[in-house]
Image (cartoon, rainbow, N blue to C red; front, side, top):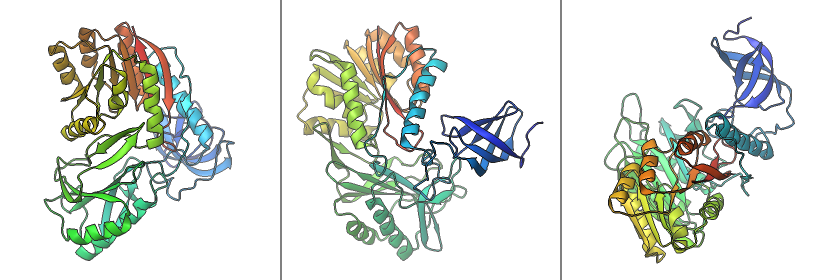
Length: 450
């Protein structure tokens, strides 16, 4: 019997998708149900049915999986952030490790398994960055996160992934909103001022950056907002406003103005100091970032005479932690403010053997080729979409035979691994690092040689 919308069926959950939904089978058809775990027997209410699959929601849990735990977040079933609050952390790590291995085999067609997954020492309050979409009605600010696959804001000022003081920052913004009749941005009309509230914390120094992302050119009653934020944060280092008046889902606009203090904050990683601007990429989990970079350094195996390319270098964090182990470091990054940060970070740490190019990875690699540089190793840390195939073509021209690939998406890593295999590389080592506990995301470090 074919399933249809509003059917209710018993279902045994057998596995988990890459997005964290449980998978069961009804008369051979895959049924996807979020908030479930392998070993659950449930009564599922079907909300979508096609010829090849169906989607359901939990009506009742008949038998609880041994992996199931009570969620410690009141909105975890509604928010699109944490997919694994209902299972044990040990089970979550198993799923993530299996996801990495499955991607390498199914997408990359490479028979390799990750050596291990490095578990996080803390699974709560680890994020150093939060970007809250907002909704304002009758002067009352609601800040939180989007519901899964929607732009409906789920109230969650006290997210368990974030430092507790971020909640005080939201309260400061709420007072300013009410006092000044601030409106929130409406995606349909393009009207309204406040789009997002954005905080960054440097865990090593305690410094905090507060940012209002606005649909306009100035922020009203800024002195009141600054005063409230100063009361909320003991180590408030930076208050900035980012201007984004474009019809886009991209959070940050192209212009940022400093309202108080510095336009950046300073953190420390592996004994190095790093300045970070609002636009700069910086790993969100400080403790696990250090372990990620230590793993990358281990895989790189530098002996001191190498020329190292640091592609997608952001503020220079990976490369500059390795600068004392190589002869020359060349970083490439497309974000101008991040390149400024990288150059300042090199100077801040007394690194004299590093230079940085502002370009996308492909164009930057071509510039390096035109300079006549012959790199020994490339470290790549691309965004979720992975690397351009053409980048690897330039690596061929440069004679690079060793690549350390840091990835935030096992699927694109596996796809790129298959391309590298076509070019004569093989993967020697692979580790997973859990930088994002309770979410579906997992980081990997791999070593390719030929």
